[in-house]
Length: 497
Image (cartoon, rainbow, N blue to C red; front, top):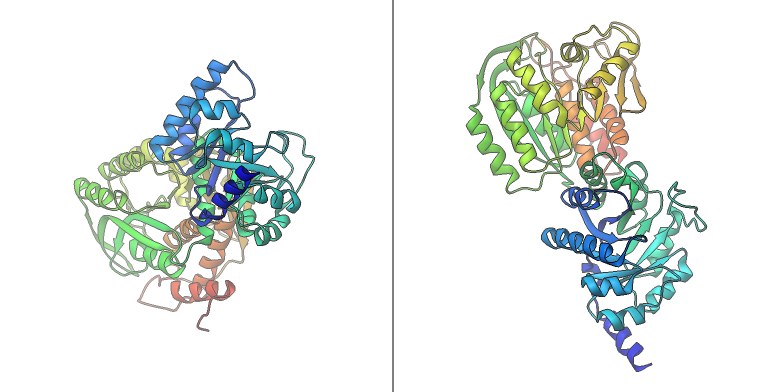
């Protein structure tokens, strides 16, 4: 009994606010190439790895565990073992996770020592309170949603989280059926970590899946929330390019960094001249930003030259950037060519296959695919073709269609989503493509999953077009400021009418 008192005194003295049990919590599966897949996930945002292996010989379990432990140690990621106390001791893991039928926290603490992390699976408030009184360092709570991986006998649901967070001071790891699109609800309801298996390890790109989930936790950050790097050309008139990007990013509440690919002498009537940035200097800009500032989302616009595109592709790969939004800028509003044939070929080969989201308008989709796009069926065909060329997600913008509602179509490789808005008759549309892509990037950086980020960005750009004031003698710019004010009002942030 004295051991239990000493143990509970130790638990009371712990600072759970600084617990390493936060963020994306990866539970391993029994699939092949496990170490390779886990390493990709660790490099893209996983904070905790729980090694779960129910089959295999003891020597095999130990060998794989040592490999995973080394990867975690090198990345500063917490390494836990699932249920197997003897394996946790043999691996000298950071801790052990126990199910309801897998032994007591006190016994695990006696065996592993006072500084190891002990977690307990729970299904309701009663079990969570017991785990806390028994001295657990964190609790797992589930299931949040039904899942195909196993039969669910206890469905706690997201609605259980607030009550448990109110009564339990331990970090709460939500588990069960969590993915990119429903994870935001779990984060909003108070979970400290999202435990996933197939959402990452069953994905064809575990690193990308981990990066998507990690971004969801930016929902809790203070403004400016999330960091966006724009790589684009300068518009001296201020309506498009890097100027439009940084206005959008800043006004919507994120931090914007930039790397410039070209200078333009430009106004509302068109582009008078272009002065390209040397590729070596572009590389220096990218190194300066990416080696110092944590960038959540990268957005590209006008790239200008084949050399620039090659440098950008190399640097984004070097720094492990996964969430890359590519606006394939090819033509200025006035019709000036902004990319030559050689650069287009390099773009298709080097940069497009790295796109998390590609956002072509119809002329750009036609130039990239080589066929005419004149209706929504053609837009879907173009989206499929561009996905086959390597883009993970494609948003084909329908504003250039001659008639009817303006519909943008999002394709994720399996499903199509439509974003229709009434067509606005105005010539003040300078910078719409840059602004939309930057708004999507910003909302992604703030923790919105892709479908919601696109929907919110569409609302923003529609308001920016509606609220545009005439400026200059040609195609005036959209109204970033008033559109952002409208978004802020909708979020309950004090705003100016």
